[in-house]
Length: 449
Image 1 (cartoon, rainbow, N blue to C red):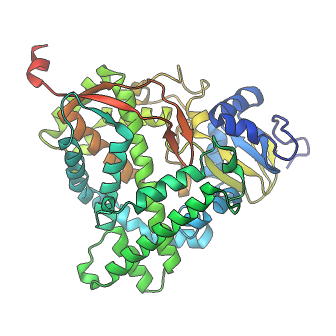
Image 2: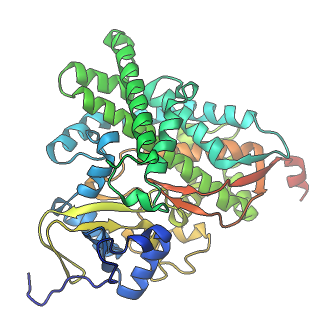
């Protein structure tokens, strides 16, 4: 590496705590200001840990794809999530990760995913059947319930909504990693009330998962089906997966699998509620393609729906930053990144960067139509490279199915703030209810118009 290559520039923080105060005050503004004032590869410090923000699409591609073997998940991520999912697919690395990825992959093959669509549609229909004309609904509440139900039915073959342990653990995990609270940056071993609740609810969740696996093992293999839980139980019995690996993968999919999709749907509905013309375009597409009910073969043809989802995920990426750690000295965009440096890849700052997006805060799905002129990694809501989200296709299919089901029955308008407060926890959460007012579709009136 050339001797004239320097470490990335960045703000000087306070002694000991570095830039932690600014991060906890407003993490989104922090990364946007870091990008605008110091460049798209810039440094900062958190409690003595040297960190670099990687917000240039070419550098993001280098980290996630081109030179992915020079980076690992890193100590920041593994330390924080070790208790919850340390032996699972999301956190592990190397041969352990490769083995688990291979084992889990069959549950996410396209042909298998197509068989999940009827359950996705049925679950969405059950949600919509509880709604009424003129009703005001908390979108994230309903979408979280819906996606959790979908996940339980399709991947685990059980109704997980009947047991509050999953939602309670989810709430505790989110509180533990809420970056607007200074203590979320403190070591998780400190016995704060938030940490104690986190450990208690996590223990409950892990016990619940162990019981699910034990119940499945009581059935002969030929009667288990081929959902994710049955696949993992089979590998456990063949001694190709440990009990801890099974448990942590189940926790990973239970938590990450429903939370991110629910948030993606929440923010898509938030955007659509403010753009009736986009709602009308989607209704026309859904009516034309799907007829009375959406089916698996319809999903690839819902192209405008896909663009709306992509644009909502650009504006409000449920996973708003990724962590990596350099396993050797590397050069990114002309800067020297020493081995061991923590890298943060903030989707929020890249997705809203005016260098790649015209009017970046505007909701404009057609920017994803045809040949787009933005760099490929200016939009990476599901990551990229070999470690891209294994559930990406599942999530996209579910979002399309749920949206098609809702728009077949209702139009809606926003009944809460157009720009809700957001909380940066494990995912990008609404800090307050996002509410829409429902209106039953009057197709005769639409025809007259």
